[in-house]
Image 1: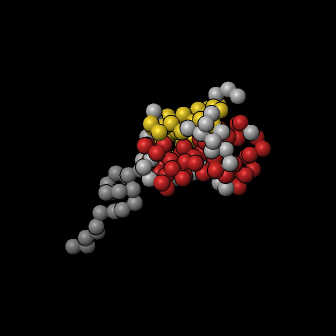
Image 2: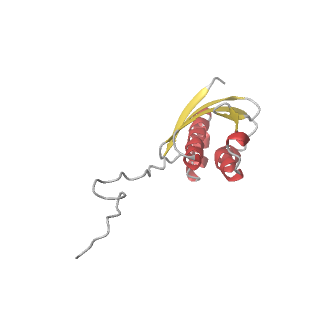
Image 3: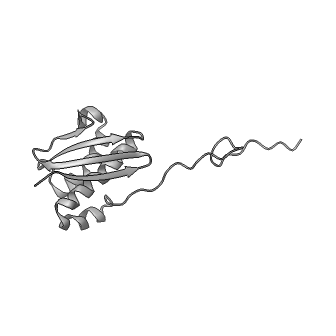
Amino acid sequence: MELINAIGRRKSAVARVYLSEGSGKITINKKDVTEYYPSAILQYVVKQPLQLLGVEEKYDIKVNLDGGGFTGQSQALRLAIARALVKVNEEDKKALKDQGFLTRDSRVVERKKPGQPKARRRFQFSKR
């Protein structure tokens, strides 16, 4: 198996994933996954597609993460890993799709409008 790459996005975060056969090591921006995500919840989110298919110890994953915050980055990474796994084995697509790991969450922050303090919040109205 050669190197397989995929991309995942969420909010303003972009995750580029390079998947190869190995021992199950996940490296994010040249750091180990436990070092990059000290939170167990975010580590769980990243590993969800691998655990669903039972291939945690089968692939080495190198990741370039850019933009966004921790949550957006972890969800972008989950999407990218799921897409890479589908490229490896097309039969896994249904299982990943049923869990919602192949769906791109398109919600982003609404832009701030001029003459208002936030996107929808208006300045307080004074009658007199």
